[in-house]
Image: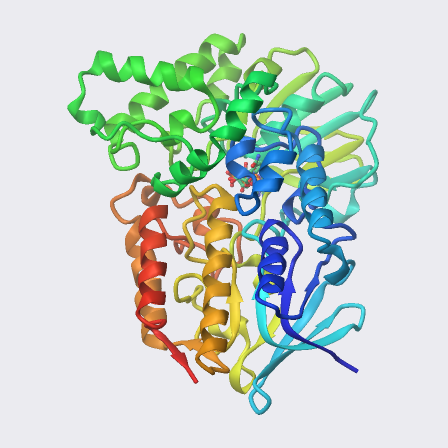
Length: 533
Ligand code: NAP
């Protein structure tokens, strides 16, 4: 027996919670199905040591409620996962959201009924529900992935994935720990656990350009000022190309004298967070000269901070220039490699051959381990949607529809899947965007669309195939001319996704303001590119 709702929301993370809040405001009945045993999405699953914001706390928080802004006090400029999870619980409790959230409810199938024009979902534990609309708030980086090395299952010690971290505290003291990966997650883990473990071996395939996070507590005076300036901060994030508080110098770096450029790089390095990445010059993402110069500056910092020159060289990226991947925010990451109990294995020189019951074998050595931590990332952007068996009109599955890479209109709809919306789906600007800023505007657009349909007596909305093809093409083109397009070995291009997804740009790189304008324009034109019936 299916329960009936107006809307089914998949996922109780930042986007899902806000979707529920907005649907209630519209007077609709909604049920959120959440795979975890708690709310929070990313901030529920990624509870690994050192997990924290890479956006400033006050730029990431929700903007929709003045009371929330006034009441919640972030303790740090980049708060840690426990505080973020507490914040999301506070918001959910404040608006009594939890009564409409079903936990421990992973949706296995979502099937469109062509006759009734409704969706039916079923969870892995047999709960069924029907609704006219589905909002998939499944997150961009949710479907974690393990490497397919031989013997992965055979390891007799403890194997952990950063995105499925257990709730209990893990005592690493006296343990020989291996971390596979050197992305933003691995950097946070490595610098956090190194002082605790007996020995830490870092298995690095590709070094990354890390920048200092420069996290610190928010003082009482700052707290007051940040609350007063909250809406200015949100407005700034709407205006900046990348949706963050970092506003680049409008001049092209190439037009500025070198000495002035170098001074700016240092200032941005000192400022911390994504300042150097997103707040540099207007041509930072197109000018190889600027990117390479920043890379040189960072390489010099790494050489100065890491005592062993050979290790320093391994930590300096050789395959990509600065800014072509999201840069990890670090604190003492490089100094971690000066510790006697930390060693670095360069997997390019000595690849992993297999995982054994007692450790990891690389080309030249066997590394005996008690714990292996996989910080190996995700089947990005499309992963979580593809793991659900989603069937649209005439039973066509999303897997079939996307067999040749994702196709979307504005990232929110896929042709043949009426009334199915994705928040922050493929082809949204999230490669740079501060997630809450982009999620809020995405959710507001979807809710505005449902409101419009009710007011005008429409029952279904689905993107036209032409608009879908045009948007998909526009997304591919948006990366052209940017340096990221030269370096496709990142989650922006699904580098660890299945082969049919890999190598295609999965996002929109036209900037957050342009994305918002396009959305507003489509809505103002009565949802141009969508068929309403
Ligand atoms: P990631 O950036 O995709 O990094 C995955 C790492 O695992 C890379 O170093 C990758 O190496 C390595 N890897 C993957 N498969 C491997 C294999 N078979 N063998 C060896 N190494 C392998 O994933 P992530 O670090 O989880 O970060 C993903 C994104 O999440 C970030 O870009 C960021 O946007 C976000 N994030 C945000 C925060 C925050 O807000 N504070 C924190 C963490 C992450 P290669 O580079 O060679 O593929």
